Image 1 (tube, rainbow, N blue to C red):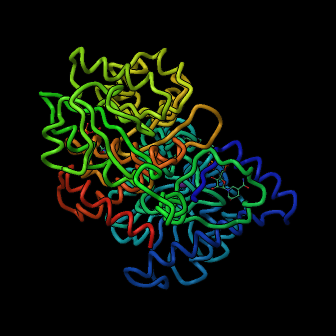
Image 2: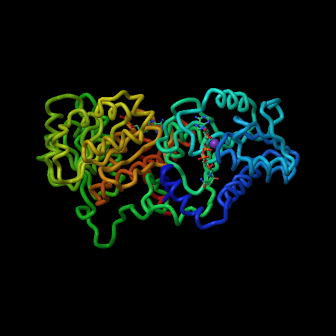
Length: 481
Ligand SMILES: NC(=O)C1=CN([C@@H]2O[C@H](COP(=O)(O)OP(=O)(O)OC[C@H]3O[C@@H](n4cnc5c(N)ncnc54)[C@H](O)[C@@H]3O)[C@@H](O)[C@H]2O)[C@@H](O)CC1
Ligand SMILES: Nc1ncnc2c1ncn2[C@@H]1O[C@H](COP(=O)(O)OP(=O)(O)O)[C@@H](O)[C@H]1O
Ligand SMILES: [K+]
């Protein structure tokens, strides 16, 4: 599991650790780790000795880390120049170390044409509200060349706790972060500014609380959660998932949701609705019923919503499913048709899977607001609907009502932004629910496999939703291996 902690908790842990170690030890550890990554980057296109490194140094400890790392590079023969945003406030120890190692300190940027690496040490966890105008100008000019940009702790200007980008911010090729990930490194739009992530251990682990603010499943976590049949299993014990999706107008949504559901670990898929003929033509293994969900037979979880359209029959299907006593996943048109009180009154789990536009409609906000502040939006929805909420998009987040950490999905590709791929995800996730995963696990494992399947089937080229569904078994095998 990859964890992220908010700034307050990072600072509290740092205070506890600092009380136990010699003064300056943490900054030395951070700077040493930073210098190693700088060295690796420089060696990719040459070597450290004789290379030219430009440090952008702010007035806090983020600048201090950067100056000490610059000193280490200067000792290895790099030509290191530091531009200070506030010369009288730069970290005195770091500045002295750089000068003693033969580095230079200036107030002006000078020629950037020959620079091999730009290190952004303007702000870390102490930065707020985007870069100030003078820092913004410096960053713009310093990063106009071809040299890679490495951010220290965080790309300066992004919000560490939320992933918001409230003003101008550094765009880095890579970020070296200390002690633990911060939420902003994992959530777009800030995550897009961070590039490749490197975590440097400074000994903070034992001081951090057990429960992170954010977590990301890794291969091994997902493998441990996948429902795998045993000798005792039969199709009913593995769970039956019901799919209430599609309409005369959108029969394809029914087919795609069923395609996802067939690959999610349930033992059987029941389909209820007007797309029965289309479903059976494509997937003869489906148990179909042309009428309402409550008459379709017993299931262990329902998926309702994709392609339902607006008819009275679709409203009935949503109400039917919400009245059931099994876990329910509501997606797409179902999110519009559902009665909020009926959702809140449910005793079995409910999973809502909106994209940003649907989330905005549920919150009475603008879509852009949701996209800019995903973490706040997903938490708010989970609390309002007393549900598990999977917010789709460039960063998929899963939040549950209560204080469990929010999950951020590490897989996926922007090629997933294609019609129908959400239908596949809802079927897949519903199938995991029917197989017995708890709602938070089902949603995060569903998103993980879906993203991996998309990457596998895309491999850098456009994909269609059905390609994603077909690649789910390969993604499953990847994880399980
Ligand atoms: N606290 C610790 O024990 C450790 C901290 N470390 C480093 O220290 C950093 C935190 O240091 P600080 O708390 O001094 O804070 P920062 O260095 O992140 O930033 C604070 C400084 O930036 C200025 N600033 C704030 N917002 C700005 C903006 N929008 N534009 C331009 N300047 C702005 C402030 O005036 C302040 O002087 C971490 O990110 C990390 O890099 C590491 O050395 C590891 C140990
Ligand atoms: N920019 C993006 N980067 C990564 N994944 C994305 C992006 N945009 C959308 N997705 C993913 O693509 C899928 C689209 O789902 P959805 O919006 O419901 O589409 P549809 O309704 O057409 O099925 C979701 O899994 C979502 O997370
Ligand atoms: K920084």
